[in-house]
Structures are given as structure tokens and as C-alpha cells.
Length: 286
Image 1 (cartoon, rainbow, N blue to C red):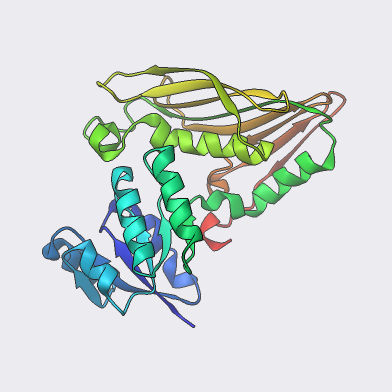
Image 2: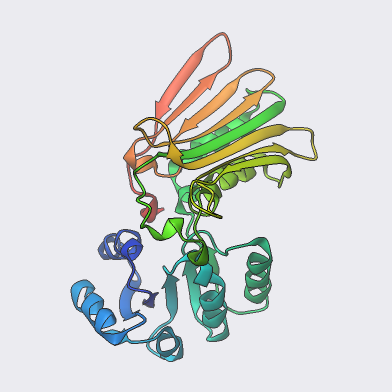
């Protein structure tokens, strides 16, 4: 069976997330592109090889030639079009973050559970073999009792221009929405549970938009931690990492979100330090 995929939005992210890896993925074909105007949809469909183009998202949802959709709209529109796709009986791969707030995410989850379709958030890092190696360390017990879990995703100031939609509140902008969702996922994945937020501090160089945010966390088990995300970080290097500290040592994962671009796993148990590098195959193929 071949899944016929429709793109909800002819967005920049669709090319890297869907179009480029698609030729190497069996069982999926690009069936349609929808945009807010037909001219843009036709241009994207011609460029990317889709047989159908729609000048509205509603037309794509109504099409019998589409089995599943990839939602690459701004975050503020994820709830609306994910729910529309579920209602239309189409499977959904929604770009992260799944929703602009927790209430919207719960609404989507409830709708997905009561449907016959698959709804997934596009956090593909979790399926990469590098993450299996991380899990093996955590489950193997060599760190002992886990005391602390920290994570960050920081991008230097200037890498994301102020004209980018990530600086637009109405479109779901902000460092926490775009970058912090990874740091939050890292610590939730490591702990296997949700923490409480003890304290949070944001820096807003643009009105109502967090250029950076740090939050102190505590889990019911007593484990503590911190997450940080920034679109205005100092320096010149993008940094993404997860660090788990236990009674016998620490595990640090460098760049777990995109191991194909270079990732390292460092385990320090005091008497010895070992390192390994991540599999360079793309997260799209796992």
C-alpha cells in the first residue's frame, strides 16, 4: 500500500522535512500541495512533483486522493488544521510543536484517541539509533540513582532574523515554542515522567516574545533539573544537549536532536570517561 501524502502549506520547512528525504522512503508518495493561494500551491507542486495543487487547505482535506497530511504551518495554526485532518479521516504528521499551548494539545490528543487515524508530532530524533544508545546507558544502571536532568537548545543571536515568523506572537513565535520544545522533550524522555515547573525566567527583546527562557524543574521522584532555550544566545555556536547526573556519574548527549549532523555521547563515572559518536544516518529514515 502506498500512502498518498498532502502538504498543508507550501512552507520552507516542508522541503527539508518531507521533499528531500521522500525519494528514499518506501510506501509514500507526494499527492498534493495546498497553500493559501492557488498560484503558490501550483508553483510548489510543480517544483516538488505533486500531481495536485489546492488553493486552500479545506480543499486538500476534502480530497479523496490524499490519505495523510503533513502540517507545516506556523504553530498557531497547528490545532485548527490537525483537528480538521482528523475530522476528514486523514493521518497526520504535524510539525513541532503540536500546539501553541497545553489545552490545544490535549484537545488534539483527545480527538486522535477517538479517531481511526494516526496523529504524530514530528519529533523524529527519538527514533534514531543514537537515542537507543542513550537509553541503554540510562537503563543499564551505571549512573546509579538519577539526581538531576538538564537540557538546552540555544541559537546565537542574529541567526534568526527579527523578520522571521519565530518573532511573531500571532504565529506562535518564541524560543520556548520553537527550540524549548526540544529541551522539554529531552528531559521528559530521560525521566519518563513530567516535571513540575518550580520557576521560570524569560528575556523578551521583542514585546511578548521570549528570546530566551530558563526553567527550574522538579519531578515527583525528587529529581531536579533545568531547561534552557534561546534565540539570542551569546557566542557563535548552536548548542543542543542533554545531561543526566546520577550518584555514580553523568551522561552527556551532544546534539541528540540531529545526530546525522554530528552527535556525541559522553559517560563519566569518575574512574573513567568513555565517548562514542552517533550514527550519521538521517533521523528521517528511522
